Length: 457
Image (cartoon, rainbow, N blue to C red; front, top):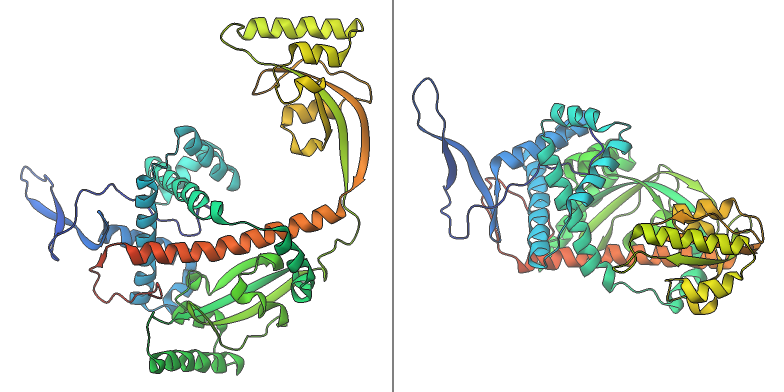
C-alpha cells in the first residue's frame, strides 16, 4: 500500500444533489450493452452532508482499503461498526471540504504537484513508478490529485481556523517547565495503544455507568490475559486507530494529548491503565514501549554556529530587467574587488529596505535558518571574505562575512521545545473541539442501515 494518508479514502466526487432527496434515491446511468441500453442502478446515497452526499460505492471502496491495510485484524471489528467509523470519517472530510470552499481556500496546481512528489519520495519511487502503484491500488492519478488537493485544503483550513487561534505565552512555557511530571516525560517517546468508548452528549447516569462498566470488564479480561489489547481495540474501540489495534505509534512525551499526559508516563511497558474519562468518553491505554531520556534538559549543551554577515540584494523591476540587474551586480562586485566599501555600496544600491540603511547588515544569523542558496555561499566564506554573485528567489545577492562564533543556545532550545509541545497540545485540543462544533452545526442525514454513531455526539 502507498504511504499516502492515515486513511486513504478515494477521491470524493462533486455533489450533484441538494437537500430533500427521498430516502430511496439512487444515482443511475444508461449503460449500453449488446446493442441495447437500459437504466442500471449504480449507487445509493447513504448520507447527506450539507449540500453534498456520500455514496455507497465510496464507503465500500474506503472500507476495502482499510481492510487491506489491517489484514487479519480487520475481521476482529464488527462489520457495521467498521463501516460506521469509516462513514463518520467520510462525513467529517466532507464537512471540512465544504467549510474550506465556503472560506475560499484554494490550492494551486503547483501545491498538488509538490504533494505528488512528496508521496513519491516517501515511497522511494519516481513519478512513473508512483503512477503504476496508484493504478494497482485501484485509483487513477486524477483521483489521487483530487485527494491531495482536498487534504491540502483541509490542512490550510485548519491552520486558518485552529492554529491561528492557538497562542503560547511565556508564562505558559514557565509553568510547563516547572511541572515535574512533564519535565520527566519531555525527552521520552511512548508507543501507545488506545481504546475509547464514547459517551453520547446528554447521556443519563445509567448510560454513563454502563459504558464505564463495559470498558472495565474489557480491562479485566486484558489484564487477566484472557484477551489481547490490540484485538479488543479492533473489535470494541470507536477511536480512529481502532483498525490498527489502537496503535497510536510513537509519540513524543511533550506531544501527548492532555487526556493522556497524567496517565501514560506513569505506566510501565506492557502495563494497561485504569479506565479513565474525558469529554469524549471512557478510555484505556496500554504502554507498548518507551524510549529516550529522563529530563527536559538536553544531555549536553546545545551549541549553534552563527555568522555576522552583510549583503547587497538587487531585485529586477519594471525599470531594470533581469539582465540589467545581473550586469549591475557584476559592476558592484568589481568595485568591491577594487576596494570600495561594502557598507557604502549597500546603502546606495541594495534593494533590501530592511538592511540597506544599516549598510546591508544582517546581524548574527544562523545559516541553517537561511535559504539553501545563501547557506551554501556562507559555508564557503572565511571571515572578511566577499562572496561571488549568486541568484536567489528574490534576485541577485552578494554576501560579506564579518565574523563567526559558536553560541550556547541550550536555554532557548529548551524553551522552544516546550513552546512547540504546548502549541501542539493546544492545537490538538482546539482541533477536536472545532471538529465537534463543525459536526454539531451541520445538516447530516445518515441513511446507512445499521449505522452506529462513532462521533461521540
